[in-house]
Length: 551
Image (cartoon, rainbow, N blue to C red; front, side):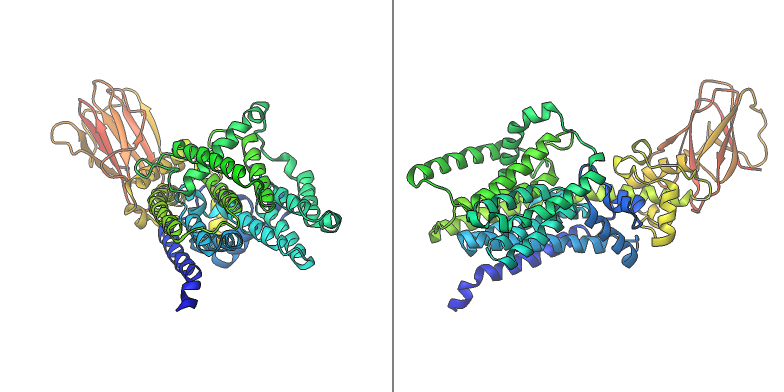
């Protein structure tokens, strides 16, 4: 019985890992490749040096590109599930390493609370639910492993730390922050060991410098004097937001908006508590400085590259920010033994934070579900239009309804699909997809086929040809089905008539045309494509309008 009680935190951690894995995999079950994933899928499918070493934004992404290439060859491109499984494993592993790190300082119960807070960190939904963020998760995992290995203080631990730091750099430029932490960890050790242990940092940094000289210097940068001067405030705000996120106060679960107010209050309270403790018991544990240096490096580097979308409250920054906050708190509380009542209070606070953050995590899933629907719908439209689409046709924001598909052009997409399969809806699935996806698919189809109109002024005929049907006037239906070919739309004399179409959409006509003046005929050209569903033409006019099918 005593052994069970002693091992209770580890047992409960196992349960939390299982629940977190089940929750994340359930939330991502119907998602697909989203956003920046398409840059790898479209542009980095080969083993060339540029594919591997070209920076993504300002980050080195060698290992994520290799993972993408491996998974493409093993599992194809029809489903992103294997990548979500890998992401989940990485998140579980990172939580376990955080548990070990915190347990060494404040015992197993607080370590359990820290791991649980990270596992269900709703404000970091971008990292937990987006496969592209294996970049940050991988760097966090191997950065934590590096710090734990360094604590061994022996040659084997240093070798493992060096390898882990190299891999940390391979996932993302977050390796810079962990390199700073490693350097401080070495420097806070015995002076006579500095030179002997310098390779732990020197080798990874040298490899990163080689990458930077060859490829990284071309990376996108938003470094400005303004950002540098404003960085202290950015860093303080980042600390506050991370504190709020850890304790379930970083995001409003009702509106989903980031709310740094509680984080600021917690940060002020933390600073006052530290000052009071220093008054009563001066000094900090030496293990605090590597983590504090790494956190500062991370936040300042982020501040230097601030731009719209990279604010302190950005979801993808909460994951590593909260890891650093939890590690700092563990060091500040090092060797403090809390009473049973304090541990119960900690358990209640953790449970409340987890419940709040799970709500935020589910809202994040809804956001990604909308993007997944648009992704699968827009790419389905590309496949339907394949016989006639221009190879250079691209899914820009004005066409796709989202800025996350800018890397997809018809030619590159079809090349990848022919080799690895397609994640797009089939025409049958598209017909049953959520309405926003069907609506956007109609818009993409109209541009990709493309639909075209040609106005013939004064070409209206009083007597319609055989097969013509009324589209406006007494007894006319609200819409007329039209198929491939050249459909003639005849508008009787009168004011301007307007035309709009739908195909997969319901209850609206998202595709509009230039319309037609009275007394004219419009030739609507619809290329033949890969789907059996007809288009539906809706006419708004005060005069008679006839629709004549292709002859």
